[in-house]
Image (cartoon, rainbow, N blue to C red; front, side):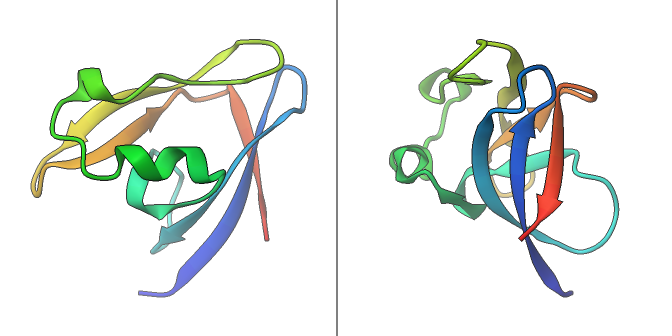
Length: 92
């Protein structure tokens, strides 16, 4: 599966949120914490076992909620379930 890199922006204020890697084709439904490349702030959550350990994904400028923390089965991988319509992406 080819891997692509995306920059995620807030749809409300156009603020930068993060840069991540996505494998495969299709829509962006979830972002795995281990695939977030920037900012480095997210690295501390890559081994989280509980969704309560992961902060919600929100815009630092307008505080719009963009993603809901979850532990994705199988593999117990920490991820964000993205909220449709709250973000847009550009391939980097």
